[in-house]
Every structure is written in structure tokens, then in C-alpha cells.
Length: 383
Image (cartoon, rainbow, N blue to C red; front, side, top):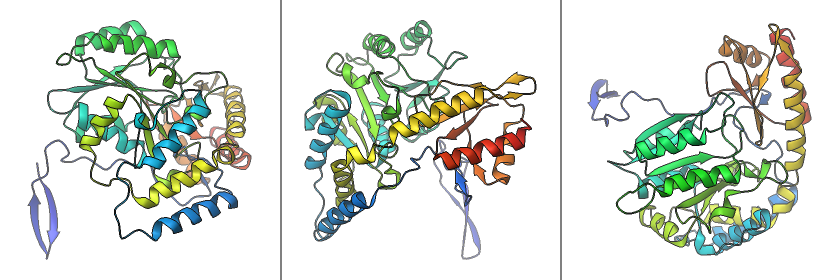
């Protein structure tokens, strides 16, 4: 299959790779509306103090932009290790840390290093839609194993699927996107143990726990970081886009064994992390306490939204709402979710059509944004 391009009035065919021919680019709608609650962004921007530090650090980096950046971003890896030690209680060495332009690029590095032709990746669906695209882009086969109706993972079914399909890489998302569902450490341990029994040329399958929303998990919930010393085939990814309110900074990172990290260094592009990106992330980590101070507020607003949605009756039934440990809420079910989505959009509220048919996802915003969402939903559904 080919893609046509208009060049000097003449239509010419392009030799598009079969695996992507006809595909549309991934991306949530970017619309100029008053209430944008569709991409799980943090609604609270950086404070003037944080902006001042970022400006100072970027200005210092700008003086050396004629030189390539530190390709191993040594200072930043130390900053991230220090942050994780404080956030999760797990002390890692800088050599156990990897970073890239968003956790998306980290995932691509993982499949470039461990996936590829003749190998496969596995996810438990519904899951983040980009996982299948990471596999497609790295020529890695892709297996989707359904979750239970409550969006939890059937551990026995998971173990059977891992044994039968022998994936090289297994992606676990906790809290899960789009459902908000979190995994316990025992669940992560069970799946990683099953992965350890897979034989990939004498090595076990790899488990990657995507903890993009980890900071929003409920008090007392553990992080898969606690299992790294137990499983050398385990990696945990994080991002600064959500809790750190740094979506525009594009910094995602990974914690794993030094051997795992060194393997990723083989496939990364030279100087993939710019001096400016490193400076912004360093500055943000200097103010981690300030930037994360709104996390508790978002958790409280999330829990209140879950309770409110569950109290609403639509067509004779209470709305279904998934438990959430993230900064968003997954709710339904609607016979025509697109009509509901459009009705909210017509009122200036943009949310997300995501996951199985009938379900919608809304990002937790400020109290003002949540009130606008509730009012729009009441009007649209006649609640």
C-alpha cells in the first residue's frame, strides 16, 4: 500500500512501510475550549519561585548550547535517584536510572533493546493505547490479554497467557490508564515470577511497570520500585509530566538494574536528551516538595468526584465508576458515549473517549473545572 503526495501538481506514490500504511497519528484532540480535561495534565502550573529557578537553570544551559549535552545526564540521574529515595523509600544508584523525552521514548528504547522481529510484547487491556504503537514501530509482535470486568488482572489467566505466548516484554500499568486501577505489589510479584519462567534464549521475559501516575496512588500503596532488588528482569518507569506538572518539559525516566540501563544506552540516539531539557528537569526536582504539594488536593478532588458520579442515576441505574488511584476517573456506561462526549464539548468541557465502548475518562482538575464538568454532565444526561 502506498501514500500519495502532491508535489508540483503531480501526485506521486511513497513507499510507506506496510506496518504503518493507512494508520493515523496517535493523539488526543487539542481543542480551544474553556475546560480541557482530556489529557490527564496537572491543573496547577509551576509557582513563580519554580519558574524563576527554571529560568536561571535554562539561562545557564543556553550559554553552552554550542556544545553537545552530557549524553549520560549524570547530574539528572543523581537528582532522580534522590527523588525516588524520598518518594518511595527505595535508594537506587544513579547508574540504575535512565531518562528520555517523556516515558514514551523510554518505552521505545525498551522495545528497541528487547523487542523486534520474532519477539513480542504483552499488555492487559484496556490499557494505554500507545503500547501497541510502540510494538508496531519496533516490529515487535503484540498480544493483548483482557482484564476482568472490574479491570483487575486475573493472575491465573495471566500466568497461562505468559506461559503460552512467551512474550519478551510484559507491560503492566499501575495505576492503569485509562481505568485508574492500581496493582498490589503481590500482583506485580506474581506476574514477574511468571515472566521469570519464560525462556528467551536463556533469559527471562522482562516486566515493565509503568507508574506514570504513581504519585497519585492512595496513601500506603507501595511502588514496584520496592521489588527491583528481588527481580533483575523488572523495570519501573515514571514521568515528570503528571504530578510534577511538567508535561511541556518532556521528561520520563526508568529505574532498573545497571545491566538493563546499559542495554538501553546501546539503542538511544546520540545526545537524545537536550541540555535545556536536563536543566528544566533539574530545576523542577529542586522544588519537588512545592510541585507535589497539590497532589493531595487532586486526590481529594478525585475521591469526591468518584463518590459524586456513583451517586448519579442515569436511565434507572447508577453510573458505573472504576476505582481510581490516578488523577483521572473512568466512568460509564453509555449506549452512545460519543453523543455524551459531544454534548459536554458543546458546553465547553473536553473529556476523553477511551477504553471499551460505553466508557469515558475525565481528568481531575481544579474545583472550578470539576464544577463545570458536573454541571455539564447533569445538563447533558438530565440527571
